[in-house]
Image 1 (spheres, rainbow, N blue to C red):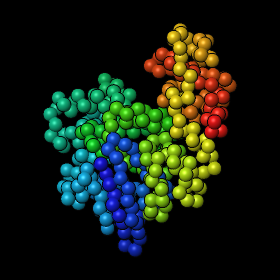
Image 2 (cartoon, one colour):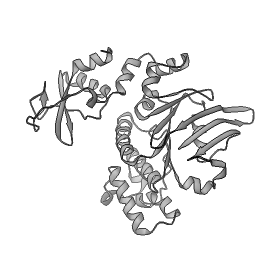
Image 3 (tube, one colour):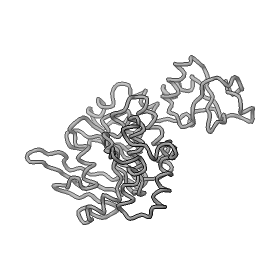
Amino acid sequence: MIEFQNVTKVYGDTVAIENVSFEVEKGTTTVLVGPSGCGKTTTMKLVNRLEDPTEGTVYYDGTDTQEIDVTKLRRNIGYVIQEIGLFNHMSVAENVATVPKLKGWESERIDARVDELLKLMDLPPEKYRDQYPPELSGGQRQRVGVARALAADPDVLLMDEPFGALDPITRADLQDEFLEIQSEINTTILFVTHSIDEALKMGDKIAIFDVGKVVQYDTPKNIIENPSNAFVSDFIGEDSSLKRLTLTRVEEIMNPLPSQDKQGSVHNNKPTTNKQKSLNPKDSVQTALATFIDTRADSLPVVNDGEIIGSIDRESIYELNEGK
């Protein structure tokens, strides 16, 4: 869907990125990560031609972006930034409808799309469509920003540090929500962050940048297990075993629940109490470990759509971390 082929970008005497080559497959999320000034945001801006390459070629669906009308290109690419960029004088609905209106959609289609996206973002339209950005929390504004970027059904979505300005709890919640949304919309996403933890959580593939060059482009699992050089090892950090837990979902190591009372909780596959904390099958094992530490439980139920589907025990996590 998106391909960088030997791309270099120079500003005066400064080389921002040099000989960058990688391909983003359709419907996947690729995260660009690295320290400040490494070239990750510059690389993203080359996709929607906020910047143009000095050398090399950026392809959009097989076509050189330099051969595509820049306005047409940008209207087919969603863009989400940390500062959100909402128009404060426009309602939530008007903000979300911005690009569909520019593309000439009929008003009925726009209204339906606005309501659809607000529901998807957990913002009930009857409550939020007529509110204005200053009336919303930071997390709510960011949700509106994502909805606006998705409004015209873009094939590609660019996200530049989209959750970076939020508090840790809101950021984690939005990350989880967006992962669920991505499984439904199947959009090709290029995501910029400085956080390796966020990259490991959000990406199907990760491009690690260092001084303008891609030093490793691989899956999260391979990056943790086979870092390409000392820089990547240092960037991942010494707690790589804990980071490995972020890549495994609870559903992968849980004990499926046999035919039992699914209204109760589970302890060693046996119903216990409805008041016990539970986990979602899509939660990371790292989240499960934190819950075990918080509750001091030996086993926790796994609940999906209000129904218990299995259990996970503390020992399974220890075995996973030890590579058993």
